[in-house]
Length: 535
Ligand code: SF4
Image (cartoon, rainbow, N blue to C red; front, side):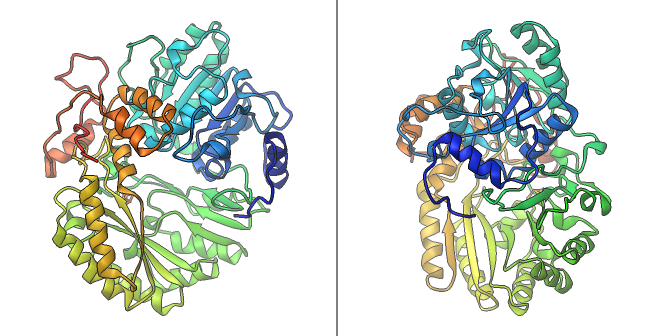
């Protein structure tokens, strides 16, 4: 990504960014919808879902503009409120509070900070129950609805769950066709895969089941390429959707999302625009595509660079790697997730030491700069012996290629068999990381994500709408870790569920957001473990 040389005011910045985009839609055309992304421009423009919905709303009507969390409001720790600044749409440089509909796509739980900052900063009442006829109708959806949509309920007027290629245009048309704010919200909330947010204090509807896009809506592909995206100047396209595998920690697992939908080879190729110099193949399980080698070869033969969102170690072949090298790859990144063979079995990851050794051999022998390995520590039953096995194995791998390992900490997610599992503990996770770092010092580069933020994500993932109110408290108190810890301290106790495997786990995953029969509340997602961590 190119560095921006100087500070521009918001209007200047928007002009500068628009001038570098290819494929911008809806400029200087009135639109009733602004798609407001709760992270900055470079992140939002790398979201295939955000780009796809923007493209669909512009292609099929009624038109949509974009807005983003101002860059200055991104840091996790930020005194609030910051100096006043307007939140403007890019296509018409209009304050977003002046649009009839604000649509927000939320990727994951920690983006709740961005929701709070964006809405408040834009002058839109933060809570759905406080909005009036003068305010926009706020529609929310996005990947976070596959894990914990209840977190969004205090903030949205209408919630759309799951894939929204069909649901969002329908909701937008329904809102525009229904006179009166309250009636429009009720009508949109009654649509399939949708519900009304907390528009009245304490009123929650049962969460809807997840939408699934019709096959003719696929592939998803981006409208705009820009040098300022995290995936700089990359045209994004999804050659398959979903995953047929069953990793026990993953919200994309086939049992939850209906499996993998494979598109014909020509489908993604036919939508690549002439100006695209790089093509990013995005999807949960792209390397499971039967025709992936041919797809990559065709892109590379057309003179374009290529990127793939996820590579599986057991699917790498010499020919495939050679094409990736021709397409600009210097680092090969694969996920191991479990830090030992035993933990990979617990997670049902179906990647073995043998697969990882073979991947390292291939990467080393074909001239790539390095192998990057994703690890997820702290999953249920993990012990110090697993960390010791990782150290031994990583040293073995590092003899075959230069090795970098990134570490995240396991966060139990709804709609997975490991839902409700406790958090490993910040101190435990930090001590384990320290042990691994000491064992690999000077041999393997380690890039850990701080376990304390995984704990915040864990609490946000495992609780109901009440945690949205605690998030407001944390953001208003500066958003540092201490602020989150204090905000969560007043959450009422919840009791964890037992670890389930095998058939019971599969049953649990199928039930998804089904009502909790022990709960008197019509709101159904208040299950899960107590945030019992003692940070
Ligand atoms: S971790 Fe990857 S392979 Fe496993 S279910 Fe999720 S998307 Fe599929």
